[in-house]
Length: 411
Image 1 (cartoon, rainbow, N blue to C red):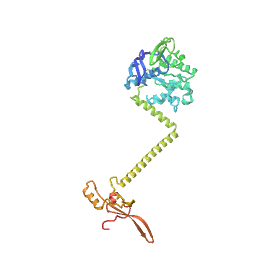
Image 2 (cartoon, helix red, strand yellow):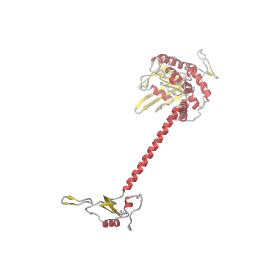
Image 3 (cartoon, rainbow, N blue to C red):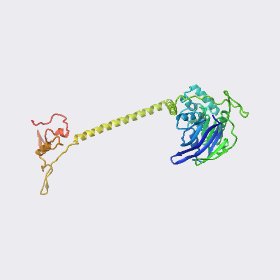
């Protein structure tokens, strides 16, 4: 790390019309411990989320270890390899054990061998005093234990900077101070720079500097104690600083990401977590997939049935004749008595033939005579309606004869 681990120059950020960060200028030295205080909505969490590009700033500069954060994915990747993040609500995968939560990123993003990743994770879990819970799931741990796991996961990539968004906000006093003691130890032994957001005044006592924010601005920046320089490296071992014997610092050589883009890396990690969940719950996963298949099949059947019904309705409409004009004779009225339908002959056969010859829009003309008559068969008879049509009546009306044939002119 360079002398200034983090440098912010004129940083501004907006959410729509809301100006959440206003002209932020802040330098954080390597190995320094900084606490951000202030009322809710003052911009503390937004500020630290801008440091690892979880939030994008719209104006100003943010420089981490000499790399300026921009929209360039390469710069974002490079910075995120140096910066770890601890969230207030832990954000652990509930279906993975403590050890698997810590090794998920090294195995799936850095492509580290599982034995190596397990060994590294157990070493870090030992450092945060939670190694004995490595085989348990997050739901089996207390809030303080889950936060220790979250810290271990943030440290698995050997970050030089640790950002903590109210890591003690959901913990009791005892667990809160245990977590802060752990962060102090990491700072002293590994030279980790950390920026911590809190509302608790007693937590601020652990910091080298207390920065207070209000309405998106830094209103005060007070030093509580002289910051100790980070441990120095001699070969692969640390040199004693201020008379303290310091264990080996994080490795100088950092693994290179096997995947080139941040999106590929993130997608690979999520896919691995999803596959792990499926393998752990085979029966539930099988039933879920069966439900999906049944739902998709039912949807396909419903669409097919709907299309069939739609085609049937269209054929029915077509059979009625969408371009067919039917002229029905009217009825006469004489002396207040109205005659039956057809008693007034308004259109004759001759008229119909003239229309067929003279009207270019008329393709075919057919006519129908309807009468009521008595039909007798053996010793039974019925009164029924008898219709006489011309031979081209069925084609004009799009009628299909189910059996037999129509009557021709010869008949």
